[in-house]
Image (cartoon, rainbow, N blue to C red; front, side, top):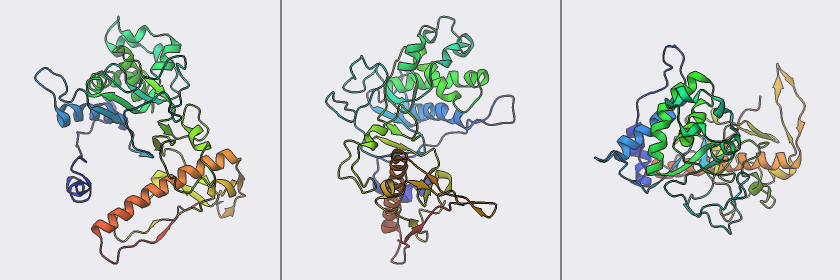
Length: 347
């Protein structure tokens, strides 16, 4: 992996680095694994060993901005630490009576709004935090939802990211033991931030993921002029990240992250087929394919669903094809395969 990174990634910029951590996915006393233990422990390992800790026990880059994203999140626009009050791309549906800070500073982290609610306030916080006087116990349900229902991207200064990651790592195993499940590590982040008295500014516009979900940046996508699959001239009014954790299907096109060929970044592999630019406007249905050899009828889609789904498919296709084309131009010969012919099987 290090060799691959050195060969293909480092030439883009020496600032692009890779950090390896131990595997942390074991569940104590069980034969099962919980892969998401790797998020808090891996983050902490990177901060302590990749960035470094000074003699005072503090991170060596206290004011550097750290943005923690999931591996299935893709940049749609450059990310800057600037949130001007006049911006039309900032969407806030929590704590709307409060002004949005102009930038992330120590003591004031930001994050994407997630529908995590306040259920963690009913957990056994004495056991999880090891502190009967934990600040995590002092927040109302309203504050828990408005200030701590956070998810990737998490944005914080080095000082705050280290503080949260230390408590996140400390709390994640007892949280998982108390309430096993996919989101245990996310609830552990909520508890860690609340314990440290680090309320977040939660914004909706950092991400789009589930086309039917509230609290995401879909308002920005809905406002894109038709045809919505044409490449945008600017990036100012797009969400920050595409979170590809759903099956996306409209017309005859579908994208799922686990279906993308593992050899997509090779000289021989074809690139992804480009959807039609009007995929979101003139294909108000999704093909179901066949089941047991029997073709199933198409399902109608309303205009909003078709446009949002097409935006995800077209954006992801552009991102992957741009990366694949760069790879081929830099590392392949004249016989490199630039054909855009790969299309996900709908059956």
